[in-house]
Structure formats: C-alpha cells, structure tokens
Length: 127
Image (cartoon, rainbow, N blue to C red; front, side, top):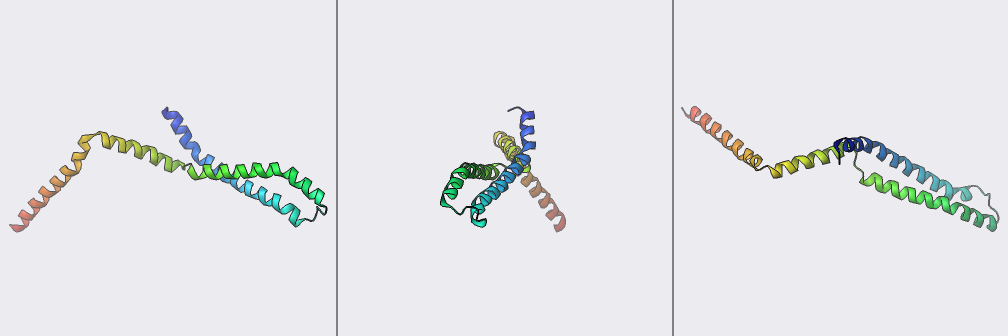
C-alpha cells in the first residue's frame, strides 16, 4: 500500500469509529421506538391493526438490527488513529530489530561499558 494512501486511512479512522458509534445510538433508539410505540400508545385496539403494524415495521426493525450489529463490530475492531500509528510504527520497528543483527550487540556493549566504568570508579574509591 502506498504511504499516502496509508496516511489518509489512518487520519480517517477516528471519524469512521465515531460514525459507527452514532449508527449504534440511532439503531438502539429506533428499536426502542419501534418496540414502545404500540405498548405506550394504545393506538391499536384491534388485533388486525396490530398485525398490520407488525408486518409493516418488521423491515425497519431488521434494518436497525443489522445496522446495530455492524456498527458494534466495526467500532470494536477498528483501532483509533493513535493505536493504528502505534501498530504500524511498532511493527516496522520490531521487523527492523529482528532483521538487524548488529542491534542485538548493543545491550551487551552497553553493559560492558557500564561494567568497566563501575570497575574504574571502585578502583578510584579504593585508592
């Protein structure tokens, strides 16, 4: 993937995540309204009217449920922008560290230098 495309999508992640949260809230609200309308308002006294309402509203309920499930799934698995930068940068850094054998010598060399300096300081203190 080209770097400019990757940077573009990284900058859009937060907005996509926010959109999923908005869809989630709207879906929950619609489902509550669909469920509560015939129960709260006694507008359907006749069973025939109630069955017509249920048939008519079934499609809207299914759309709300699908939108709810998709928005939750996307919001759950889509990282935020800062997380995505960490994933990409951290992955590249770890790949580089694993491929470059000279980097594994650095901790040993640093320990050796510190050890020598401490030995010199101890000899100076003994004098």
